[in-house]
Length: 264
Image (cartoon, rainbow, N blue to C red):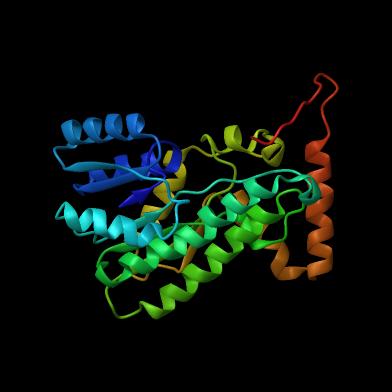
């Protein structure tokens, strides 16, 4: 089962796993995109792809999904928690309702869905974190903190799951060419960074999971991995000051442009 499967990393995970012969449950809000992807993968790879339109910000999403799949006679053996979104603005300027939805989707729903299915998982559990989860990130304070939670939570489950046969991985992408920045409303968070493709990020995850001794977490991209080392070798004060200075530079418009940013 893949959440956030209608586009970006979720759709890429679906394609790569279908290519490997996996039957899929695709979960996201946009029914038309899910159905199209399910039809594409079923036809191309001769697997069964089931589209389940679902809003993961609804209360108790894990229980509701488990009941729906049980009704359809589907048993989930692997789970990719990819659904999530970010906001980018000084915290005092953020919309409270938008923040609440961000925390609900990125943290509460991920935990709830994981708890609902972990007892039946025998393959892999992948939770998508972010390089922003490795240090405080001014102007993306809530998003970075939510991904820090996902990273810590998943690494703990990796330890708890040792010896069970379940492979657990926290995947931390950096800037990636997906709809993420459309939802954020700005590419300032990635200004000056080398963006990866969804294919590169998913390949990193699958390569890690294919190892004989898979790690608890992996960062996609060498430069992104190097950026996570800052917090290991500097004090927390120096780390947050350095990241703050970088975000200020990223937010400055170039001479050739006038920037108008809104958070959707």
